[in-house]
Amino acid sequence: MPSGTDSRYLIEAAGLGKVYQRGNEEVIALRNVNLSIMPGEFTVIIGPSGSGKSTLLHLLGGIDRPTNGELRVTGIDLIAASEAALTRFRRDNIGFVFQFYNLLPSLNALDNVILPLLAKGMSWKDSRARGTAILEQVGLHHRQMHTPGQLSGGEQQRVAIARAMVLEPCFILADEPTGDLDSISANSIIALMVDLNQRLGVTFIVATHNLNLLQVASRSYVLVDGLLNTAHTG
Image 1 (cartoon, rainbow, N blue to C red):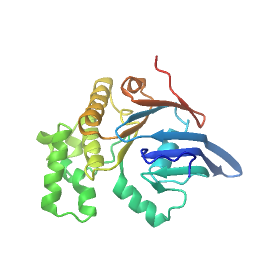
Image 2 (cartoon, rainbow, N blue to C red):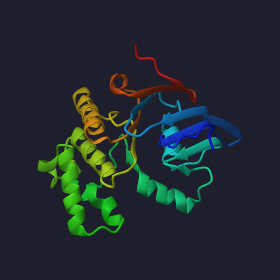
Image 3 (cartoon, rainbow, N blue to C red):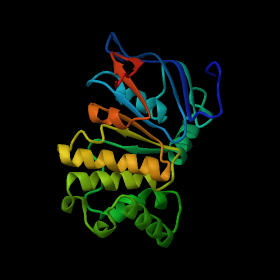
Image 4 (cartoon, helix red, strand yellow):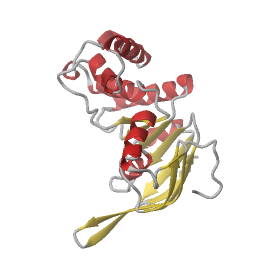
C-alpha cells in the first residue's frame, strides 16, 4: 500500500493514474496523483472541465478502478477488492452528491431520501423516522412531502445531500454540487455543507469549478490535465 500508510487517514492514494482507451487513442485522465484525507476535513478540488475531477471522485468512491498506483479508502485496498467488495464498500461507506440531483420525480422528498435505507433492509417506519430527521438537518422538514418538481434547484440539492447522509457514510463525494444553481442558491448549498461539516463532522470531498469553495476548505487542490497540486488561496 502507499508508503507511510497511516490509519488516521480516510483516504490514501499514491501514484494514482487512470488511462482510458478511445479507439486507438489512449486518454490520460489522471497522472501520478498523491492524496491523503483525514476524517472531518472539507476537501475541495478545483479544476476546469476535462481536468479529471470526476474521474478522481469515481476512483475514490469505488465506481471505477485506477490503471495504476495505490489506493486505500477507509482501510480497504480498492485495487485488490473484488467487484462484490466494491459494491459493499460503496453502499456502506460513501455518500454521493451530483450536479443534477438524480432524484426520482415521482417520489416526494422524504421517499427519495429513504430509498437507500429501504434498499438496505430497514423497516418503513424506521426509515421514515431517520429520513425526517435528516431532512430537518438540511432545513427541509417542512418540504418533505413535496416532489422534486415542486422544489427549487437549491431545495432539490438539499434533498440529494440528505439522501447522501442518510446511511451515515464515512464521507460524501460531491461532484459539482453548485454547478446547476444560481449564485444565491449556490452560496446557500456551500453554507449548508460547511455547517454539516462543522456541526456534525461530515467529511466532504467536493470537485467543483466554484472558486468560492476554496475559501471554506480545510484542504484544497487544483487539478489540471490530470495533475493534482495543492491550491494556494492566499
